[in-house]
Image (cartoon, rainbow, N blue to C red; front, side, top):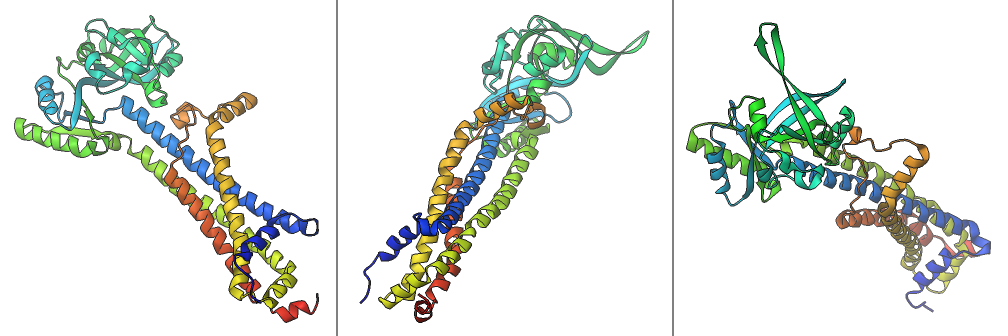
Length: 421
């Protein structure tokens, strides 16, 4: 007499259900499910945090830094207006804005800090950056020629102890010769606004002034340090900027220096990708350890169910059916554990920011210091493809863990097992 299919699945489900006589085996099965769920959830959460960090960092960098820039190779651009017109003739460049940039020391009272001073045209700057939208107090439109107003980052304002309406002094390394000796050039600026980019590098070290005031401060005679470009496809920024600079060089006979966001901040994104790869490999080993707990669970079940296996074999079950039975049980553990891990990961990612803030309030510490991690919050981003890859990895390892126990069960001699029943 042969048993009808699919009896293996129903028997495997019975073995998974808790019974008083086999509560320990059921407990071990539950532990295996929980182990896989935790391992899958941890891997998804870690990669989601790194994805969110990468995406947020990229958005904030592109919001303040130019997609690409073209600057003079041996000094300021001689005629930035004409160069801007030629640049905007390209269909792949959306906007271009001139800037004057230099370094200075910002001083207020006894507080000081090194900063980059960027002179901009407020109307043109809106087209290449999000400075207007992140200005929390004041208005970038106040950066008019001759006003000597400045819009500074919120972190810099805290460090200097200033607010809107206060004055800061910008001290340049370039000196001027006087009868008393060489003195540094200084100029007072009124704080007309504060911006909050959410990235420490900008909030702590960037000062905006009007283009004309910066040109006067750095003695460029109205010439621009360069042009900041907004590229339609930011991932082609380097190639587009290089092509544009070569075309300009051929027309004007002057060489130009090219920068783009991938070059300026390459180390940030490269380090994130490297860390993601390392974390994926390490946490995949955690999933492997959790999955191979299934081996010990199934071996205990095989030992406990030797009589059942012998009876099934005597009723006509084939070794393949016995293998299917125990492989189904192990696979079910892997599937349930993986699904629980996905649900847990989604819940954690959903409330991770709130959980971090709760921990900070309880422990009275700053877990995400902006001057260390560049960002002051903890963003997350679930990517379906990565989640699918992690799920596939968990299921493959769970199925692989069932092979040896299933083979062992299929090789059980029925007569030998029934002798002791």
